[in-house]
Length: 139
Image (cartoon, rainbow, N blue to C red; front, top):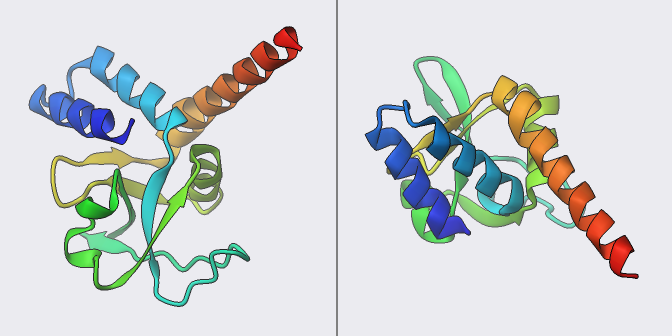
């Protein structure tokens, strides 16, 4: 759930990014939980024409991702909130070689392309495949 992701990120950051068990739990939760993105007002959500609001730090551009609309902070007035499924946004971030930051205005978590490619997307696909296998075995 989104609230447990927030708690796990805080725990991971409190460990100075050393707690590998918590990192594994974050990856597991992210693979299963739709998250919110800020898109420019007027983005066509139905046709998938999303213009993401971005943040720039030290010359690096990040797409901010949020566990909930309450976490948008100063971006709340700059765009609309759209909730996306993990597999969709992982693929989009990877295809565009984007860095993302979850909850940039609090205890935050960075997602870089290698993390998405090597851990998040494979875990998401694996989780989806397992769910489909369970459905088929019950049928």
